[in-house]
Image 1 (cartoon, rainbow, N blue to C red):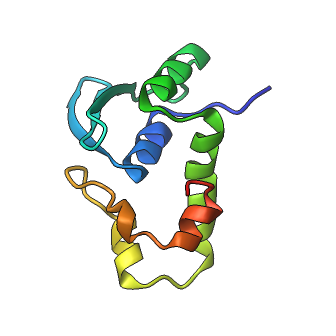
Image 2: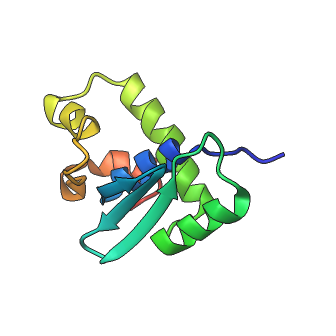
Length: 115
């Protein structure tokens, strides 16, 4: 059986690639990517249904493989190294800020397969 993802995990992953939280209505978080002008709605449930997840990923322009990399490789990377303050602050971005992708080290992007 394939791994399931929670809504919070998906929101976290999308924020890491430039999506910002626009607002929340009930259990749904509305995110927007300013560069691509794409809006995505993610229900914050313990487990997203396969069709719901696929629809979100398709609209966001990423694959399930990309999602796995964003969730797992980034956590491994950030827990394995002594990071400079800039990178630590990137991890703790507020919901109104977006990921300054151009400031992320190239080795990190390569590790995630996102270069």
